Length: 239
Ligand SMILES: [Zn+2]
Image (cartoon, rainbow, N blue to C red):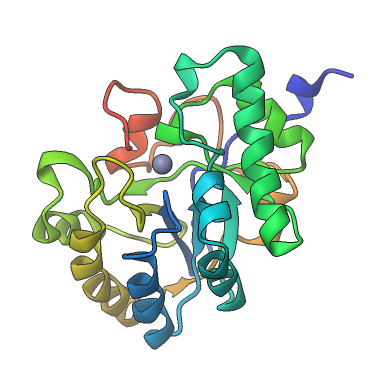
Protein backbone atom coordinates (compact mmCIF):
# COMPACT_ATOMS: atom_id res chain seq x y z
CA UNK A 1 0.00 0.00 0.00
CA UNK A 2 1.40 3.34 -0.99
CA UNK A 3 0.37 5.64 1.83
CA UNK A 4 1.81 8.71 0.17
CA UNK A 5 -0.54 8.43 -2.81
CA UNK A 6 -3.51 8.05 -0.51
CA UNK A 7 -2.74 11.03 1.68
CA UNK A 8 -5.03 13.85 0.60
CA UNK A 9 -3.48 17.26 -0.02
CA UNK A 10 -3.40 19.70 2.89
CA UNK A 11 -6.50 21.76 3.33
CA UNK A 12 -5.72 25.47 3.10
CA UNK A 13 -9.17 26.95 2.55
CA UNK A 14 -12.76 25.91 2.03
CA UNK A 15 -14.77 26.19 -1.09
CA UNK A 16 -15.36 29.93 -1.61
CA UNK A 17 -19.06 29.36 -2.33
CA UNK A 18 -19.69 28.69 1.33
CA UNK A 19 -20.61 31.38 3.83
CA UNK A 20 -18.47 29.49 6.29
CA UNK A 21 -15.16 30.64 7.65
CA UNK A 22 -12.95 28.66 10.02
CA UNK A 23 -11.09 30.26 12.89
CA UNK A 24 -8.20 28.20 14.21
CA UNK A 25 -6.16 28.67 17.38
CA UNK A 26 -2.80 26.96 17.82
CA UNK A 27 -0.25 26.03 20.48
CA UNK A 28 -2.55 25.68 23.52
CA UNK A 29 -4.07 24.73 25.76
CA UNK A 30 -2.61 27.65 27.70
CA UNK A 31 -3.95 28.04 31.24
CA UNK A 32 -3.58 31.80 31.19
CA UNK A 33 -4.88 32.65 27.72
CA UNK A 34 -7.08 29.86 26.39
CA UNK A 35 -9.91 30.47 28.90
CA UNK A 36 -10.09 34.11 27.81
CA UNK A 37 -10.41 33.09 24.18
CA UNK A 38 -13.13 30.64 25.16
CA UNK A 39 -15.04 33.43 26.93
CA UNK A 40 -14.92 35.72 23.89
CA UNK A 41 -15.99 32.92 21.56
CA UNK A 42 -18.78 31.82 23.86
CA UNK A 43 -20.13 35.32 24.15
CA UNK A 44 -20.24 35.56 20.35
CA UNK A 45 -21.60 31.99 20.10
CA UNK A 46 -18.79 31.05 17.79
CA UNK A 47 -17.15 27.66 17.56
CA UNK A 48 -13.63 27.23 16.28
CA UNK A 49 -10.85 24.69 15.89
CA UNK A 50 -8.02 24.42 18.42
CA UNK A 51 -4.80 22.73 17.31
CA UNK A 52 -3.32 21.68 20.62
CA UNK A 53 0.12 20.47 21.60
CA UNK A 54 0.13 17.01 23.19
CA UNK A 55 2.27 17.74 26.22
CA UNK A 56 0.09 20.74 27.13
CA UNK A 57 -3.04 18.66 26.51
CA UNK A 58 -1.78 16.14 29.08
CA UNK A 59 -0.79 18.82 31.54
CA UNK A 60 -3.98 20.86 31.28
CA UNK A 61 -6.48 18.06 30.87
CA UNK A 62 -9.42 19.86 32.43
CA UNK A 63 -8.90 22.83 30.16
CA UNK A 64 -8.75 20.61 27.07
CA UNK A 65 -11.98 18.93 28.11
CA UNK A 66 -13.51 22.34 28.63
CA UNK A 67 -12.57 23.42 25.08
CA UNK A 68 -14.12 20.29 23.60
CA UNK A 69 -17.22 20.52 25.80
CA UNK A 70 -17.81 24.05 24.49
CA UNK A 71 -18.26 22.55 21.02
CA UNK A 72 -14.89 23.42 19.53
CA UNK A 73 -13.01 20.96 17.33
CA UNK A 74 -9.68 19.70 18.66
CA UNK A 75 -6.83 19.08 16.22
CA UNK A 76 -3.41 17.49 16.64
CA UNK A 77 -0.46 19.93 16.60
CA UNK A 78 2.14 17.25 17.51
CA UNK A 79 3.35 16.32 20.97
CA UNK A 80 6.10 18.85 21.63
CA UNK A 81 5.90 21.33 18.74
CA UNK A 82 9.41 20.50 17.54
CA UNK A 83 10.39 21.87 14.16
CA UNK A 84 9.62 19.22 11.51
CA UNK A 85 12.97 19.71 9.75
CA UNK A 86 14.98 18.95 12.91
CA UNK A 87 13.59 15.47 13.56
CA UNK A 88 14.71 11.99 12.58
CA UNK A 89 12.02 10.13 10.61
CA UNK A 90 11.20 8.04 13.68
CA UNK A 91 10.86 11.09 15.90
CA UNK A 92 8.82 12.92 13.27
CA UNK A 93 6.34 10.05 13.19
CA UNK A 94 6.31 9.85 16.97
CA UNK A 95 5.56 13.55 17.34
CA UNK A 96 2.38 13.03 15.33
CA UNK A 97 1.36 9.78 16.99
CA UNK A 98 2.10 10.96 20.54
CA UNK A 99 0.23 14.22 19.98
CA UNK A 100 -2.76 12.25 18.81
CA UNK A 101 -2.53 9.79 21.71
CA UNK A 102 -2.38 12.60 24.26
CA UNK A 103 -5.62 14.07 22.94
CA UNK A 104 -7.31 10.68 22.75
CA UNK A 105 -6.24 9.89 26.32
CA UNK A 106 -7.88 13.02 27.65
CA UNK A 107 -10.97 13.22 25.45
CA UNK A 108 -11.56 9.55 24.71
CA UNK A 109 -11.65 10.42 21.04
CA UNK A 110 -8.84 10.72 18.51
CA UNK A 111 -8.46 14.00 16.60
CA UNK A 112 -9.46 14.13 12.91
CA UNK A 113 -7.25 17.05 11.98
CA UNK A 114 -3.52 17.64 11.98
CA UNK A 115 -1.52 20.81 11.61
CA UNK A 116 2.28 20.59 11.48
CA UNK A 117 4.32 23.04 13.59
CA UNK A 118 5.34 26.11 11.58
CA UNK A 119 3.11 24.90 8.75
CA UNK A 120 5.99 22.77 7.48
CA UNK A 121 4.82 19.91 5.30
CA UNK A 122 7.08 16.98 5.98
CA UNK A 123 5.77 13.86 4.23
CA UNK A 124 6.78 11.59 7.14
CA UNK A 125 4.46 13.60 9.39
CA UNK A 126 1.56 14.17 7.02
CA UNK A 127 1.59 10.48 6.12
CA UNK A 128 1.62 9.50 9.80
CA UNK A 129 -1.34 11.81 10.33
CA UNK A 130 -3.11 10.41 7.28
CA UNK A 131 -2.55 6.86 8.52
CA UNK A 132 -4.42 7.86 11.68
CA UNK A 133 -7.28 9.33 9.68
CA UNK A 134 -6.23 12.93 10.25
CA UNK A 135 -6.48 15.51 7.50
CA UNK A 136 -3.61 17.98 7.34
CA UNK A 137 -4.85 21.55 7.62
CA UNK A 138 -2.87 24.72 6.94
CA UNK A 139 -4.46 28.15 6.49
CA UNK A 140 -5.27 30.82 3.95
CA UNK A 141 -5.04 33.87 6.20
CA UNK A 142 -2.67 34.42 9.12
CA UNK A 143 -2.99 36.87 11.99
CA UNK A 144 0.81 36.77 12.22
CA UNK A 145 0.37 37.13 15.93
CA UNK A 146 3.95 36.40 16.85
CA UNK A 147 7.23 38.26 16.89
CA UNK A 148 7.85 41.96 16.43
CA UNK A 149 4.76 42.84 14.36
CA UNK A 150 2.13 41.24 16.53
CA UNK A 151 0.45 44.42 17.80
CA UNK A 152 -3.34 44.15 18.07
CA UNK A 153 -3.87 46.95 15.52
CA UNK A 154 -1.77 45.13 12.93
CA UNK A 155 -3.46 41.83 13.68
CA UNK A 156 -6.86 43.47 13.34
CA UNK A 157 -5.83 44.95 10.00
CA UNK A 158 -4.65 41.58 8.67
CA UNK A 159 -7.80 39.87 9.86
CA UNK A 160 -9.99 42.52 8.22
CA UNK A 161 -9.30 40.70 4.94
CA UNK A 162 -11.05 37.56 6.16
CA UNK A 163 -13.48 36.28 3.55
CA UNK A 164 -15.76 33.32 2.88
CA UNK A 165 -13.86 30.05 2.77
CA UNK A 166 -10.85 31.30 4.69
CA UNK A 167 -9.11 29.20 7.30
CA UNK A 168 -7.67 31.77 9.69
CA UNK A 169 -4.52 31.10 11.74
CA UNK A 170 -4.30 32.58 15.25
CA UNK A 171 -2.64 31.52 18.49
CA UNK A 172 -4.15 31.06 21.94
CA UNK A 173 -0.97 29.48 23.30
CA UNK A 174 2.17 31.42 24.06
CA UNK A 175 4.74 28.92 22.89
CA UNK A 176 7.86 31.10 22.63
CA UNK A 177 7.09 34.04 20.39
CA UNK A 178 3.29 34.22 20.22
CA UNK A 179 1.38 37.21 21.57
CA UNK A 180 -2.05 35.79 22.36
CA UNK A 181 -2.96 38.86 24.41
CA UNK A 182 -2.72 40.95 21.24
CA UNK A 183 -4.85 38.45 19.32
CA UNK A 184 -7.38 38.55 22.11
CA UNK A 185 -7.66 42.33 21.71
CA UNK A 186 -8.20 41.98 17.97
CA UNK A 187 -10.68 39.10 18.13
CA UNK A 188 -13.92 40.98 18.97
CA UNK A 189 -13.44 43.29 15.96
CA UNK A 190 -12.97 40.27 13.71
CA UNK A 191 -16.06 38.55 15.09
CA UNK A 192 -18.12 41.72 14.67
CA UNK A 193 -16.96 42.13 11.09
CA UNK A 194 -17.78 38.52 10.23
CA UNK A 195 -21.24 38.88 11.71
CA UNK A 196 -21.92 42.01 9.68
CA UNK A 197 -20.69 40.28 6.52
CA UNK A 198 -22.98 37.32 7.15
CA UNK A 199 -20.05 34.93 7.49
CA UNK A 200 -20.49 32.02 9.87
CA UNK A 201 -17.43 30.97 11.83
CA UNK A 202 -17.50 27.19 12.28
CA UNK A 203 -15.07 24.43 13.12
CA UNK A 204 -13.32 22.74 10.19
CA UNK A 205 -16.17 20.71 8.67
CA UNK A 206 -16.22 16.91 9.05
CA UNK A 207 -16.19 16.28 5.29
CA UNK A 208 -12.84 18.07 5.12
CA UNK A 209 -11.46 15.71 7.72
CA UNK A 210 -12.45 12.60 5.78
CA UNK A 211 -9.91 13.48 3.14
CA UNK A 212 -12.32 14.41 0.36
CA UNK A 213 -10.36 16.40 -2.19
CA UNK A 214 -10.98 20.13 -2.21
CA UNK A 215 -11.08 22.15 -5.39
CA UNK A 216 -8.80 24.83 -4.13
CA UNK A 217 -5.99 22.74 -2.79
CA UNK A 218 -2.91 21.45 -4.48
CA UNK A 219 0.84 21.23 -4.21
CA UNK A 220 1.24 25.01 -4.52
CA UNK A 221 -0.43 27.91 -2.79
CA UNK A 222 -3.96 28.70 -3.94
CA UNK A 223 -4.29 31.98 -5.81
CA UNK A 224 -6.45 33.40 -3.07
CA UNK A 225 -4.17 32.65 -0.16
CA UNK A 226 -2.80 35.60 1.68
CA UNK A 227 -0.80 36.62 4.67
CA UNK A 228 0.96 33.86 6.50
CA UNK A 229 0.03 31.11 4.08
CA UNK A 230 3.38 31.97 2.64
CA UNK A 231 4.87 30.65 5.85
CA UNK A 232 4.15 27.13 4.66
CA UNK A 233 6.67 27.47 1.87
CA UNK A 234 8.73 30.53 2.71
CA UNK A 235 11.43 31.23 5.23
CA UNK A 236 9.17 33.00 7.70
CA UNK A 237 7.34 30.57 9.91
CA UNK A 238 4.68 30.78 12.52
CA UNK A 239 5.70 29.59 15.98
ZN1 LIG B 1 2.21 26.03 16.39
